[in-house]
Amino acid sequence: MYLEDMLEFCDAVLAYTAGQDARSLAADAMRLDATLRKLSLIGEAATRVPEAIRELAPDIAWRKIVATRNRMIHAYQDTEMTPLWSIVSSDVPALRLSLQALLQRL
Image (cartoon, rainbow, N blue to C red; front, side):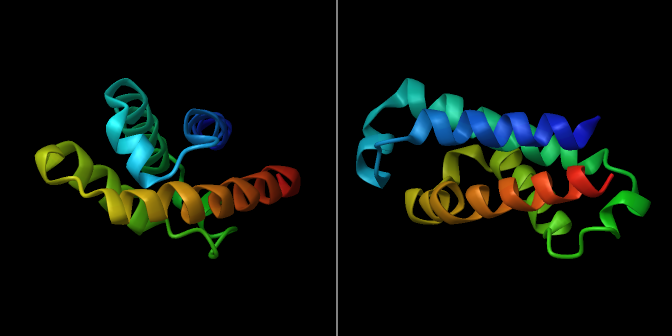
């Protein structure tokens, strides 16, 4: 199920960025690339979650997740660390909790 994939990708992002800050993440090209890849996969999986399931979790910013993925894929050279770090440090942990709650409900 795509929700489980999203949860797995969130876990990977959090593992890749544990003990990091924006500066250290930016300085580690391999870690940054891996993080960006998993973030894009979160968005890709989100595009495949059926609307009926999305409606069960209005607290998840589905469109924002997909839009972020699209920006990262299509404007990859313009990825800025400040918004990226905000996603990694705040949005991904919150998304992880929401996904866990949704999966428990299902």
